Structures are given as structure tokens and as C-alpha cells.
Image (tube, rainbow, N blue to C red; front, side):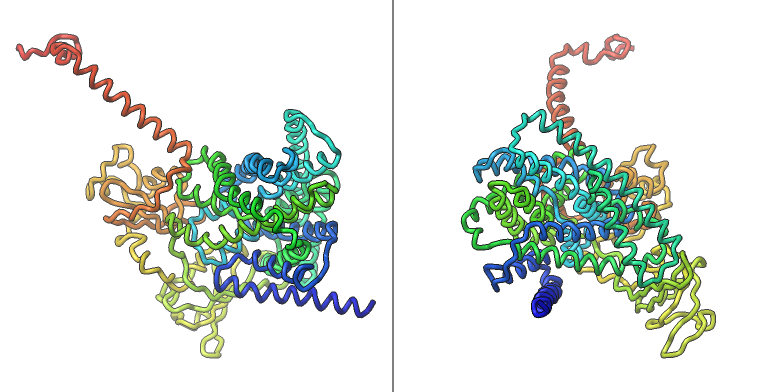
Length: 629
């Protein structure tokens, strides 16, 4: 018995160490990290090194707990401004998008795999949601600086679409296991009512649990070493409580993390660091277990149809569902195309594919193997192409900040203050003489091994270590002051225009200087208001507006979304790759209106040509303009 404990511990820790080392490869080459984790699990499984693991219940239990930890961390790290910015498109994709993807994909699965319509719908529900871990890692590891709206949409969608996919999958498993064959209208009604109850209870428990976590952390004076464990345990209690009363535990734990992460919770720096590490550990354990559970020797029997279904999901089901969901929003076609492509499937799909095995379904193993292959196809095809496609579609923007050397220190006994330690970077605004704001309190400076008061140091120099006492949730202005200049790619050297423009200047001055053809109402606006109006009221960093012979580029916005920096260019940007599909409702309306105008114009011109000369030349009072005095 004792020998078995040592052996299991040795093998388990060796797998985790191997997965951790594989992350270095993934960061170096931009490979999908989940793919490496799954491959390690497959290589050590029954068809690899011979480790047998066929306990579906244990795999599902461990995977569910790991997913709960990941979702809490995802919610904790999602800022409210990102949620507000992408709430409409992301939540539409996370709900309606999952249902549409399931419906479209299951139609193809029924014909390709010869499954019943309920079983094909079950497979569709299992692979309908995107994987938060895979999306977050690819956007971070590849150092892809996307437009904020696109990044926020992808991250919020991937963090919120799991609950509905889980609900659909479990409900369909229960129906099939009960050998029920309900009519379509009855099934739709039951699913809708069950979904509302499941999500409603999960949302209520999640909100109450989130505020409860914040309140307990503030009221209890726990040791800093115990506090992160306490918060993680409370999050799992929220997850379990919601599931125990019939609600969505996954939605509850995500909302609890969202509320806790956006409140003035104590020791937020310590909590973020701990949860980041726990999220990594949860991902590694989850992916390794799912890889171990699979049996690759069973894959060849359904390899071709599963690969075809994976390609159908990538090139048909996901793009159509995304386009239908985003039609009401005026998103540019390149952004819609990119969102449709970055729909990576991952561990959640494999985890959900275990549920048919738990339910004892006849084709449970076939559904699991098909889902596993589809996930591999998604990671191989989409995972390697995210960066190139973003550049092709013109969605990459230059980094706002260069390297930043900062350490955040939680002060003992202080609930809402922290100590920031910055190293002055060469070329940073502070090194060039920019003053530190009054609300920040520099207290100590280290230079050449000597410590001195900030007031006695004079001008800061590159290499100085500055300790600043600030309230928590401090404005990010300090990061901008202490960061070095961002290294701009030579191709992006003129990205923000050759000239700076004061956003507070009157738009009438633009009209007088360059004659772009502004209306009288537009000339009464400031340049910032003009650009914001042209962008639909939601400007963001690196947005561009062409007005006649000039182009205005948003160089920076503040935390409230107001334009604080503008650039001006006389050379229009090179057109990005044209996307022939993914038109928004606004674009469709513009196209239809243009077609109607072009269709009516020749008819009106012909009608004018057919009128008598005296009618054409008659004045407004009906008298003929014959030239007689």
C-alpha cells in the first residue's frame, strides 16, 4: 500500500512537471498549450506508457472542480469596463450562439455519424462552447495586441458560454438515458423552462455568494497565508450550493468571481497571484486527466468523419452562428470574421463528452471519441493561425506601453492601500522629467544601494527604485509614467499619424484648414466629439476615422472612454483584407438602401426626360419659365 502511494505520487507529479515544462515550449513557439497537455496525457495513457485510467466518474468530478476554479479566476480577472464594452455581443454569443452552433452542427453529425437526432444534438452541445483557457493563453502567449473590443468580446464569451452548454448536454443525456423521444415543441419548451430555472438559480446564488465572499474577507482578520485558501474554498461552496438546489454552479462561481474581483476586496494582489497559480494547476490537472482517459487506439474507426465534422464546425457552424448573433451590432466585418475563427474547443468539450458515458448511453464512447478528435482538429487548425489571421485582418494595434518593472505590496493592517515599487525605465516619462501626481505619495528611493527620501533625491534617473504609497485600485496613469517607450514595429511607425492633434480643438478649425466637408452641426463639435460621433459613441485605442482628405487616429482614451489623444495623417491606411461575408445589420441596411437608391435614380431620371419642356422648366408656382419678363 505504501509503495503504491509513492508510485502514484511520483507519476502524478512527474506529469505535472512535464506539463509545466511544456508551457515553455508553447510560449516560445506560440503552440496551443492545451494541445501539449492533452498530448502528454495521451502519451502516458493506456496506448502510450500503459497507465490505465478508465474511471469516468472520477474524471468528470475532477474536471468539474478544476473548471469551477478556472471560471472563478476568469470572473475575478474580468474588469467591469471590459464586460460593459462587450456585454451585448459576448452574451449573445454565449447564449444564442451556443444554441445555434448546436443546431447547425447536430444536423451534419446526424448524417455523418448516423446518430439519432437527440444523440447528434448531444454531441453538438458538447462541442458548442469555446474554451476560456485556450483563448486566454493564445491571446497572451502570442503577444497579440488586439483591439480592446475584439479581445473583450472573446474573453467574456469564452468565460460565460460554458453554463448553457453544460445545461444542454446534461439535459439531453437525461432524456436519452430515460429512452424518451419527445416532440420537438415539447423538448424546446422543457429546455427553455429548465434553462431559465437553472440559470436563474445560479445567478442568484452567484451574486449572493460574491457579495458574501467580499463581506467575509473584510470582516474576518485572517492571516495572509490563509486568506487565498479561504476565498477559494468559499468559491467552491458557491459552486456546490448552486448545483445542490438545481441551479448552474458554473454560472454561480463565475458571477461570484466577477463580483469579488470588481469590489474593494482586501489583499487583492495576494488573491490574484494565488488564483493565477491555482488556475494553472487546475488546467494542467484537468487536461492531463482527460488525456489519460482517452483511448487513441479507438480513434481510427471514426477518424475521417470526426475530422470532417471538426472542419464543418470551424468553417460552417461557428461562422454562421457568430454572424447571426452579431448581425444586430455594428461590428466591422474583419472583427466578426476573427471572432468566428477564434472559437477554440478545449477541455470543457471533452469534459462534457464524458457525460454520455456516465449516463450509460449506447453510443457514449463514440460520442466521446468524436468530441476528442474535434477538439484536436480545432486546436491544430485554429490554434496555430490566430496571430497571422489577426494581422491579415488588420486587428493588431501597437502596444500601449513598453516593458514595466513593478512590484505590488499589500500593507499589513491596511485594507485599502498598497505600496508600489517601480524601477524607472530608460526613456520613460518619469525619466524625462514628468511629475508624479499628487494623489500618489512617493516615500523612498533606492539609488546605487543607498536609500533616501523622495524629497531629497531631486530628479529621478533611470534605474532608480521608487516606492509609492497609493490607494488600491489606483489609476493606471502610474504605469504609463514609469513604463519605457513601447517598441513600435517598423511597419507601424506611422500607425498613429505624423501629427498630434488636440482633441479639445474645434472641428470648425479642421474644416477651415483641410476642408474635409463637415456639416454645420459637426463644425460646432470638438474634434474628440466629432471622432466619437463618427465611431458610434464608443471610441477605443487605435480607432481610425477617414474624413475627406485626412485620417484621424485615436492615440489614447481615458478610463471613462473619453478621447485624450489624437493623431492626424494625410495618407489613408492601406485597406485591410476584404471579408466578403459577415456584414452587420447596419451594413446590410446601407447596402439595401444603396441598391434602392440606384434602382430609383434611373427611373426618376427617365421620368424627368419624358416630361414636356414647359413642365420641366416651370417654376414652383406652376408658371412657365419662358424667359419673358
